[in-house]
Image 1 (cartoon, rainbow, N blue to C red):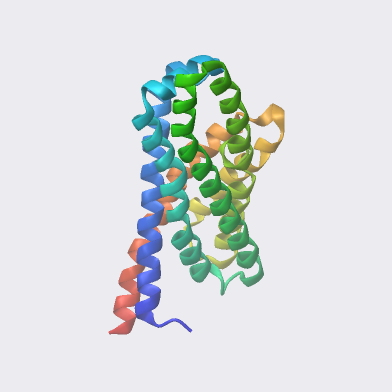
Image 2 (image 1 turned 135 degrees about the horizontal axis):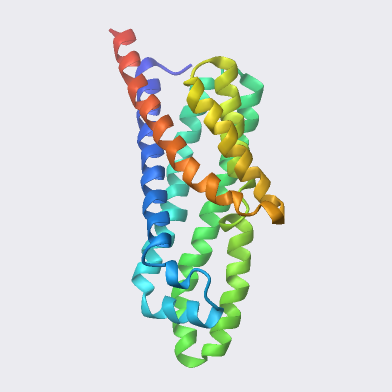
Length: 227
């Protein structure tokens, strides 16, 4: 059984991680709608050329939205599991499993694309046409793992929010919002509802901020109970 100090540290790390995730996605989405918007729907040739010319920017962008966000998800998932497990033990086991699966897919996608940005740039200098073909293949793998379909993340947020409703250990508004956001992520597996991913992405930012604030505030309770 965890001590109050351990619980406080877990809640603290989870709260900080939630805010780190929110920050990563705010920056990531902000770049999509500003600096990167001209090439988001571009043909492969134009996109690859942009990668070559702005390699540092693309590296930082993918590092934030995949690797930083993925790593930060681990303490957050564990902190939420600890907070909600007593009120909904079975549901939280399932939810945390999907949360960690999401971590694996996000980090895997990030490692693939961050590693291959330099490879694509080098290949482009020798054979631009081949670089386009390789990029299309790699981006298909990356999108399939964690860049397009939001099933694991949607299930995690939905199940955590449902456990929060059952246990009462998270604010009701946050839980109801989480159920809607999670459902939006899940339905991205249906081609006609792929655009629901925008609802999931922006909604997840708000959910991360809310969860982060709740977890950070709870650290004071562990401190007072220890005293």
